[in-house]
Length: 432
Image 1 (cartoon, helix red, strand yellow):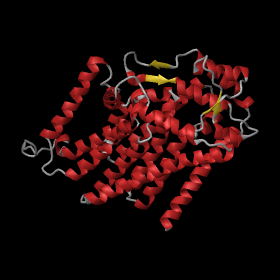
Image 2 (cartoon, helix red, strand yellow):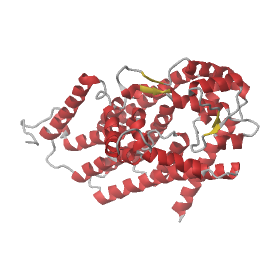
Image 3 (cartoon, rainbow, N blue to C red):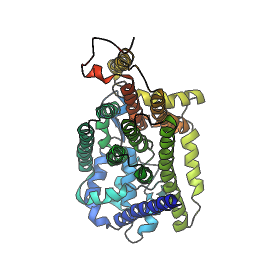
Image 4 (cartoon, rainbow, N blue to C red):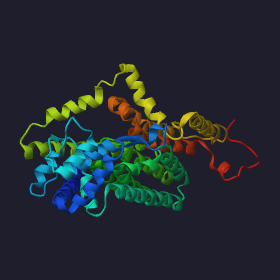
């Protein structure tokens, strides 16, 4: 009972803090952000809504469509009625212009909001509006690039400092494979990667000390914040990556950790994250219905149905397969032409070679299966929301950072580390 009450208190405090920050940001007068919002609207209007940063590489596609909507919503927050404007998440929309044009017209012409987007929290506006007091959008992109570079640099430094060489190498491979250098070029991509950094640092801290009592609160809080910030992009990532790091730490501290106990721990933490995410989402819908005094479910359910089974112009089998293959094809360097695809195949074959030739005498199959199961979760998500994953593969593919991390940890379980350190005894192999 105490655990339930503590979890409930954690949810209430975290959700309350999130909502408080969002209301405070809504209280910023429009005049304080007008200059930078105007420059941002001009910047988006002069550019393309979608464009590839590297020609021919789908994984480098930058989504300014979502950024235009987010800024449009942020512009229409009202300091005189902060609660209802936050719940509405309304913006100026016309069918006659693209979203970047709509944003420009809204800001320069003080056009009133015409459409709601209340199914998400759009919690990133709690960070975005204060930033717009100081910076325009182009400089916010640069600021985010610096933050992510410092954050991931710090994360890898901590892993190496603790001599967690396997997770450090696997995480670095995941960051490269998901082309993380393009992330700060779109607000939509950035928020969950910014959340991932402290989530991983805390996972390393708690996991290294086996503070199991702190695990549920970490995953509950991360789930709440992911829902608050997310625009349905890579929502599994802030759960799976810290989970894999914690599992690796548990195995390191307790080599004989029973398979059943490890699986139960993984399932419990995954469900805790999902509960935080789902309850935070339900809270938004409930509050919106209460504050706005309207039935919000028809709007929400119609969009959910579209994400699951909307028409994208292909057959059902092709849609399901494409939801996976299109995401895999966006990985770096596989998506960079024939040369990139050959390089990706070479990397896979090299890893398989090391895993087979230099494998340990005793391999813990239970660990491998658990890592593999966690690494497959992004593909289950692609299948569940196949319409969304098919159409938006250019950003949903980054959820596979957890898959690459899992495969790296599996390789670490297979390979005898003495071969990597050049300490083979008598030239004997542990493989065939």
